Image (cartoon, rainbow, N blue to C red):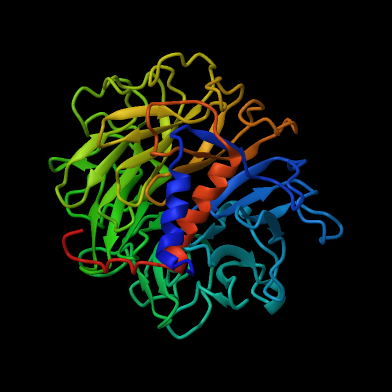
Length: 466
């Protein structure tokens, strides 16, 4: 009897659920699955963990490029091959690889590239690339397709690649943009209609003075979180504001401040770029030096918080399973699609027991169970012998990708430089630890890809309550 799609999925799910052990695998690999011979840093990951976008100084990752050169690469963890993204002809050379990103479905890339080939004084603009059709398009243009008259940066893609949030110094992208020559505004591009609107707006609908940058868009495209020094975006913002966290709601067209608690604004600065939105934009994770967002915050350092935009509550997540605040700074939050898990990096040594390696580690907080687990450790629980950074959660939190200079996280790591790793746990981030099979990790990726691609469930539409 022929195997049905449902029965095949059930079989895969059953196989993938065998064992709850955490697994670490090296991801910055060449086409022949050899470790990169140069430092690598993660830039993005699809929600099913199949596609990993990373920047590398290695020269052995893609054999068809001659001469070998550092650049951007895309690793297909199901297919087992790595593709070079070093050049995007004929649209000019890529800019800073740290500003490249990938949509959660893995189809679209967004990046910053120079367009000096068309005589625009070597300006950098935001571009999008469709991996399915091979079509590349300019993002940092106004609603009539006219390119911005200044540099653009920091693209962020919605889950399906339709919307792109970015920052720009341009004054011709929207009639509401009115920042000074050296200020940035945050913009939203609809790649289907071509419309471009400014998101860092005051209640009057015009761009605020000051600089707004580092936008991150929710998977459904409804909300954009960003940093700003503008005191005009939200009424009551103190004149002493240096850097705060704000969110733009595309349904209401209004901006609200995130780093507030019970109507009181944060008493210190937010960490620029250290924020993330859950899939439907309800929860915002961010890092801040403020001490007045939650009770008993007395550690005098940066913490990671989560704000529920529906209830207005703020929760500190860079704490131990027993609730102890970190004894050093925590940064770089990433939040799962459903808002349950938050990954972050921290220098603190008291978030878990036995943390004695003296370097920053990657942790995952389960907001439902109130537990915190260290992820950057070897497959048998050994402490990392080097720092780990840049955590990014996949989908509902079943995996986290990060980079590390540690040499003892995976057996095949022998290059002595920063590499990209993927940690997986089934069920997500249980308290059990141990070794796991690389095949089981690959199989979980196949299951996640099957669920999101072959029998894809349409995403929920933006709503007024989420």
